[in-house]
Picture 1 (cartoon, rainbow, N blue to C red):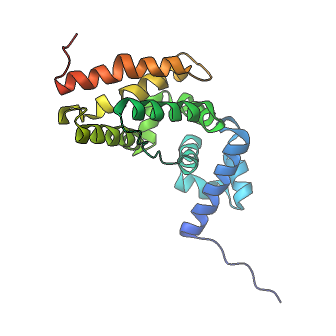
Picture 2 (tube, rainbow, N blue to C red; picture 1 turned 180 degrees about the vertical axis):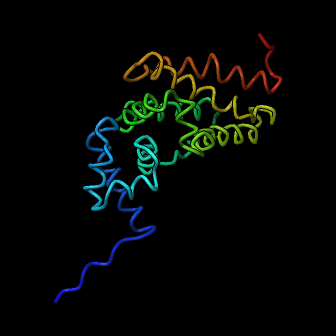
Length: 199
């Protein structure tokens, strides 16, 4: 007589559900993500999922967090070069299938700020590589410590996000990225550093 398989509990069960959600959202996007399909794929029931993730958006956010890779700050030797590389990487991300999932999540959450709240530490994670390149700029003498401010650090990525979320572009042209860096980000850094007059 064969033994019954051991019931998955705790972390093992959560991992199975989360992996099922990742597989579903990768195949069908957030629009195709359902608790029924995740439960079937994970070999569990909807009530088990709802005890861990209260709604479809929460599960979608958890799946996106699993999919999204941490951004490693570039090191080109200049603040402008680093900023452009970061922005170009973000542009590629937002233009990719993973970016499509992110835009669907933003729409479902009711806006970017609401989604960032759902993503818990995502706002800090988004600012981290920008603060890192600013810290290197300070060390090189390109910027003053006063420029190390989260709002200064994230202004470029927020403007890029605006291109996708508000204007609905499938990908931002490179000249837009250069304009964001040269006309907004770097002047703001210089103003905070006391090396340029405020407008």
